Length: 127
Image: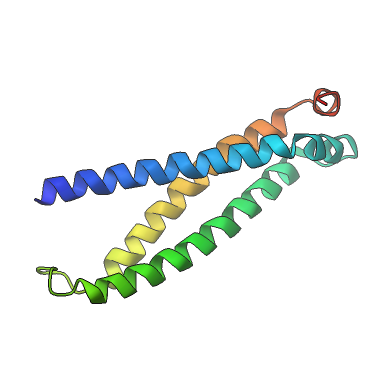
């Protein structure tokens, strides 16, 4: 049962990573012209990466707050089904939040780096 639960946890982490990567990639693609204008006006690559990562961190914080709240609420509802784990296990919640945060930052850094590497003129000619 523990192996099955671990496998489902890994699958959930993979799906969360792919979902966040997709959302951030879509956001960067829609804002390609804006990012091109920023770079043409003198924004450096680090500024563009910080811009994209700032929005990813905002999404991550909102998601973690909602997820932890739902986890605490459903943990109380399923307290009788848990064996050997408290419904409000802070170590598990903190480690899961840290793992998801690290994976989310990595998944967000890839589109951010790609946006910063784009040529401003090709982004402006896009549409």
